[in-house]
Image 1 (cartoon, rainbow over the protein chains, first blue to last red):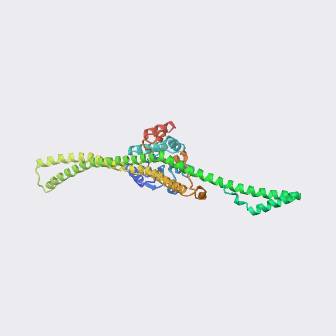
Image 2: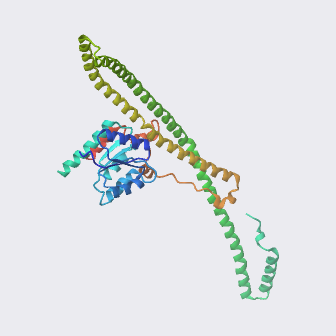
Image 3: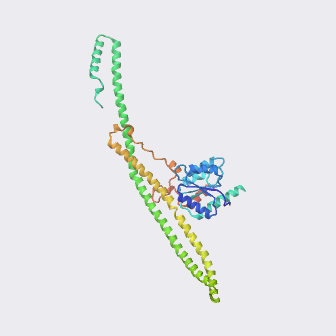
Amino acid sequence: MDTDMKILIVDDFSTMRRIIKNLLRDLGFNNTHEADDGNTGLPMLQNGNFDFLVTDWNMPGMSGIELLKAVRADAKLASLPVLMVTAESKREQIIEAAQAGVNGYIVKPFTAVTLKEKIDKIFERLAATAG
Amino acid sequence: MEPASKFDDVTLLEQARALVTALESGNDVTVEHMLDELGRKREQHLFQELGKMTRQLHDALNGFAVDARIVAMAESEIPDAKARLNHVITMTEDSANRTLAAVENAVPIASALQEQANALHEKWSRFRNKDMTVEEFRAMSKEIDHFLDVTKDHAEVITTNLSEVMMAQGFQDLTGQIIRRVITLVQDVEENMVGLIRLSGKGYSELKAATPEVAPRPVSTTAMMEGLGPEVPGLSDTSESVSGQDEVDDLLSSLGF
């Protein structure tokens, strides 16, 4: 996995962005950027050559599920891997995210081990489909 | 109903007399014309009254909606809000305890490292000053070996505890989401109280455009797509939720993930 990959973290709580940023740094990813909701995140994605998106669901402005749908609807971003890290835990919501094309789903509160597992899994699967 | 003062008595009387005269003189055209005019006046008055009644009914129904909303708030949403806030207390308490426990685990280890490093430093200085016997040097070598081993392990324990402190800060996001929902409810209560005060302070008929708009409760799918925030134990809507990451993984693998 490319540890130089450019990652966008979208969460309205700066404390959670900081936690995720620190966890990613511990995993070797230093090229992280932040946005506080879909409205600020989407233009960054469209102009920034990002390799990976980690997003919350429940945010004022544009929610994470809307951001995911906007990413999948954008020809340039459609294949961007997206990991959702959220407190939303209704079965219906998880199914909705899966149908919208999420690559991984983590419920808060989560552990560093879970984050690593899901990221590994996402990129393993992408490598398998690419090869 | 207001008294029939809308009919100008004098005009009416005059018109009635004129009608009688016209009837007596057999002037059919005039009779028909005058009967039409009298009927029109009556209809106009009726429609005005009907309009007023419709407005009153509309206002009364709106007032009823405000009442019903307040009843719903008092019956379920306020108790839910209490459960949410109590859960916030539990979560902040857990996080504080997790943080304190991690600090309590890490501090003695850091102190032990510091003590051992100080002791070795003193011996090392003596060695550098050639103020040490061969036996003492052999003992110090062993100590250094041991110290390096221990430092590796201890540094790992300290890092683990610092990570624990960091992860415990996740409460700020989770409790923030819960508190935000309660704030929305408080605003909702406030608006409905204002609506109720307006209703009781004025007659229904005076309300007209002043009737507050009662925001419809969002349909559950809309709310779900916006996000509901963390589950709060003890609230009725927890049955449709997963209880942790394992259940998320099971659900996703059942969907072919």
